[in-house]
Amino acid sequence: MSSELPSPPRENIVLIGFMGSGKSAIGRMLAKRLKFRFMDTDTIIEERARMPIKDIFAKHGEAYFRERETAALASLAGGRGHIIATGGGIVTQARNLPLLHKLGWVVLLKADPDEIFRRVAHNKQRPLLQVENPRERVETMLAERQPLYEEAADFSVDSTGLQREAVVERVLEGARKVFGWKETAKL
Ligand code: S3P
Image (tube, rainbow, N blue to C red):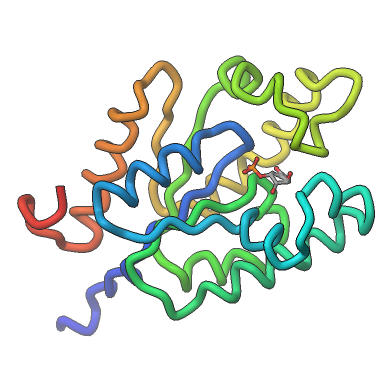
């Protein structure tokens, strides 16, 4: 009988979601609370390439970046006790989906387009938003990607109008259930 029960995912939390959805900020807070290690696929890519993401896009193009991104994700396999923030485009490559699920419990952070735009508007480090009308770009990309995020996610939290602490609490609530943590064991 017990073999029919779904086994819990590996004890890592993988954060997915659009640019500006809070993956890095929430990820760092979760890591602190759980005493997990914070990892970020964008940082891994930049360290390996020894250049910022915007330069990777400018020099080698998006397809090359996506290959580096899959390699970064694959290199995290086998770890435990990690909070892994991923780039907003991770779900655009079908090959990344099994990798995400192999890594751990996949949590989608959502926010509405207005809030996303407010958070990313002044940042020049995101090559895909350096266009004439970034607001329109955010809306188009969000609409295209939303079904991909939903498909990839095991759990989701909408952070629109929520304080970061509240978002962290919601993720922890889900984590306690899915990993079978005792109420007191993982605050
Ligand atoms: C991208 C999101 C970025 C980064 C790259 C491409 C995307 O990461 O990986 O600029 O395609 O949405 P963040 O979501 O951390 O900004």
